[in-house]
Length: 453
Image (cartoon, rainbow, N blue to C red; front, side, top):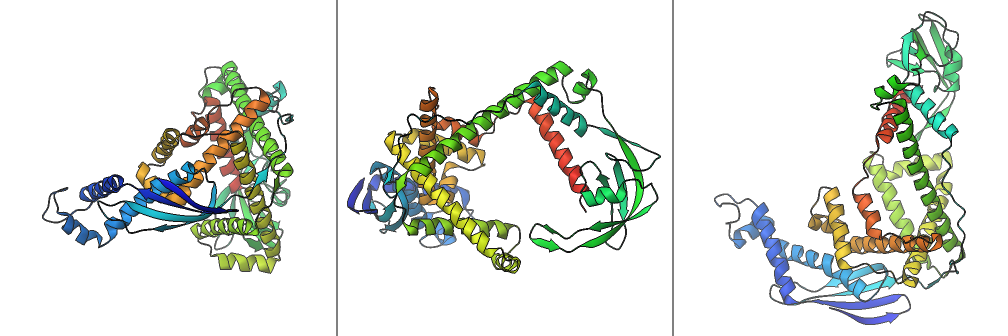
C-alpha cells in the first residue's frame, strides 16, 4: 500500500507498507532457494537447518535478500499506483523482520511539466522505399558477385582479381587481397603486376580505431593471381543458395526486400513523429536532469571501453592529444539533451492518451525477456534493480503510446506494445532469402577485412 506524503513541484515523497504476509512469503522464497542451492557437508540437499545455512552465507544475508526482493516488486508497483513518473529516487528501507510489516520511504524527482503541440493533423511524409525491378536486379547481381568463384590467371593483375600476397618482414604473413574492395593505394600498386613480383605499397597516414598510423611502406611478394568468375543467373545458381529455382529465389528475395523496406518506412515515420513532438513541445528541463543523463551516458561509454580493455583516462588523453575532447563532450551533451527530450515527449504523450499497462502484461513481458536471456524472472529483477524495473516499465508505456499515436495518424488500429517487446525478446524467424543475404554479407566482410593494409 502506497501513501503520498508530499509533492512540491517536481519533488515527491511517499511511503510504502508491505503486509507481514508478503514479508513471510518472501522469507519462504529466499530460504527455499538457499536450501536448494547451498550445499552443506553432512546434510542432504534441502535438509540442512536454517542456522547452519545462515552460517554458510553470512549473518544478515537472508534479510538483505528478502529486502531486495520486496523492493524490486513493491517500489515499481507503488510508483505506478500513485501515477508517478520518477526520474530519480532514493529509497530508505526500514529493517525487515519476519512476521512484521515492512516499510520504506521514497524521495524522488518526477519529470517536469511538458506541453505537446497539437499533432492530430500531422501528415507524416516518410515512406517505405519502393522495391522496383531495378532494385531486385541489383540485389541479385550483388548475390552473384558475392558467390563468385576465383580461377588462377596466367597474366598481369586486372581490376576485380583476387591477389594472394606474402608480406615481407618479421611480422609479415600471407593473405588474399580482393581488388574490387581494396583501398585505392593498394589497388594502384598491384594493377599490372604479375605473380612473382615484389611490390612496394605506400600506405598514407590514417586513423584506425583509436590510433593514428603514420605514412609507411609495406613490401609484398605476389604469390598468385586469380580472376573472378560469376555464375550465370539461372536455376543452378538458385539451387546453390538452397532455392528450388531462380523464380523462387526472385520471389523470396522480393518478399524480403519489401519486408525490410516496410520496416525502414515504419522506423522513418516513428522518428519523424518523435522529432515533431520534441521540436514543438514546451518544457522547462532542469539542468540536473540533463547532467544526470550525461553522467549515465558517460558511465555506459566507460563500461564499453572497459570491456575492450581500454581505460577511460587513456582514451581521454588520446582525444585531448588529437584536439577532439571538446567536440566529444559537446556531442555527449547534445545526445543527452536529445534523449531527455524524447523521454519527456513520449511520457507526456502516454499521459495525454491515457495509456495503461496491466501488471499481467508487464509481468508477461518480463518473463519473456528473462527467458530470452537465459535467466529466471527473479534473476532478471535482481539484475535490473528497482530503478531498472521502473525504467523498463516506463519504456513499455512510451512504446505503446507511440504505436497508438502512429496508428491514429495512419487510421489503423495500433497493436499492443507487448507485441513489440515480444518480438524484441524473441527474434523473428528469418526468411531463406534473408539468410542467404546475411551469409553472403558475412563472407564479403571477411574478404574485405583481408584486403586492408
